[in-house]
Amino acid sequence: MDIVGGRQYVEIAGDKTHELPPLLVRADPVARLDQVVDMAGDIVESEHLIADLPAEDWAAAELDAQRRRMDLAINLVEQYLGLVTHWRWGDSILEWIRQCETTFESRLELRNLLRPDVWPHAGRRSFVTLLADKKVGMKEADLERAVGLRLTFRQPPPISFFSNHFLFFLKTTVASAAYKTWADLTPEPVASLPPERFSFEIVDMSV
Image (cartoon, rainbow, N blue to C red; front, side):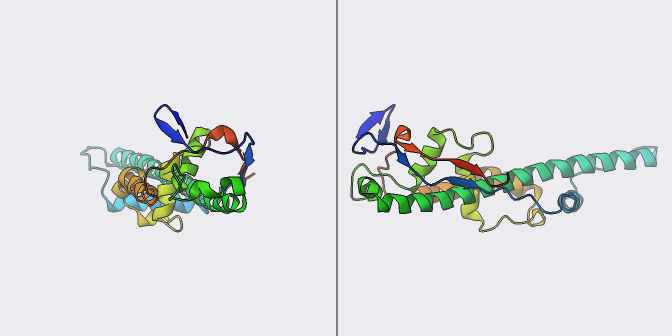
C-alpha cells in the first residue's frame, strides 16, 4: 500500500499500465432551445421574479420589464443547460464505471482490488477519483456533482419541472447528498487507484 499526501493507494503487482474501457461522453443537444427559453420565461412570470416599477411612461416601463424578463429567462436557461451537461457526464461516468468493474473482474491482477474484504480496497468512487486525478472533465463538469445529478434523475427532466430556487438547490445540496450516499455504500477504508497505472480514452460522442 502506498500513502501519498495522506491518501492511500491500492497496490497492483508489476509495473504494467492497464488499459480501461473508453469513457464515451454523450452530449445530445437540447431539443428546441426556443421552447426551453419560452418555458424559462413562464417560470419568471409565474414566480413573479420581476418587481413592478412605477413609471410615468407606461411604454418605457413595459419595455424595461420585457428586457429584464428575457435576461432572467436566459439566466435560467444557462443554469438548466449546465444541469443537463452535468447529468450527461454523470450518465457517461456511471456506465464507464460498470464497464471498468467488468474489466477488473476479467483480469487476475485487478480482480481483488474491488473486494471489500481485502485491505486496502478500491470502490466505485475510486473511479471518480481516478478521473479527477487524470484531469478529466474539469472544464466541462464537476465530476461529483455530475454523478450526483445522474443518481438523482434517471433522465434529464425538462426545465418546466423546476422552480428558480430548485435549480439553485440542485447545484448544491441535492447533487452533493446523492453522491455522498452513493459513495458511502462502499465500506471504509476506500483506497485510490494509482493514476499512473491506468490509461483510457475520452470519446466525445457529439463529434
